[in-house]
Image (tube, rainbow, N blue to C red; front, top):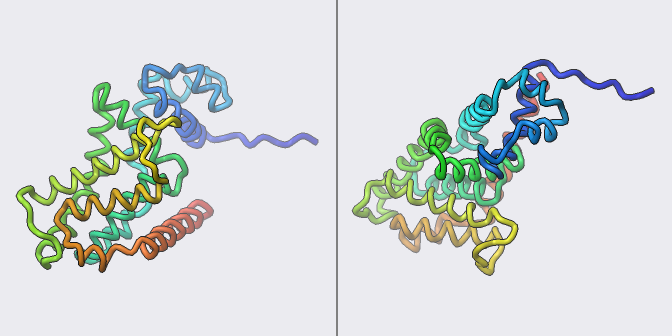
Length: 246
């Protein structure tokens, strides 16, 4: 007997279309994707795509909403940490690793977000604006509080720029590193693998915000931080599995 095909309900079908269309828009931009491409990627007819999304604009808007509203894999953990220098190092590492190594719960998600941001900045900027307002701002708030605590403790030398501006510059550095690693044929050969690039990027960030060398040596333990990231990711995956099977 042949396999019985599972018939998706409307919500599951809508989410499946978004999931298949997202990498297309991420790689080609809004104007480089056709409805027939989306239908082929989702293994359904164009008519069925249109039943859920009347036009490409509606689908792209849904993709933007999905990218902005998707629960952060590590934010709850990061926000629960005490405001301190150690937490600043830990949270910065978790964010940088998630983006540079693309190690979120959903494989490829971080890369897709970075690509969508890049396309957005070259077009109307709306996706970038939405993702800043709905996702990135809360991370900037948490990191700014950790940096303020590190300055207050004397672990970081106060600079002329406000802490929030410094954190934004650090975030943009991480995004830029990721963008330069997107093409298969890299525009810049750094002469190091991604793990090494991640480490050097973090050291540039910590030195750049004014963290003292002895403090970096005290709190920046890449092996320990990598284990924290691995455990945190495992906990989130387990939580998501339990939630989805209820």
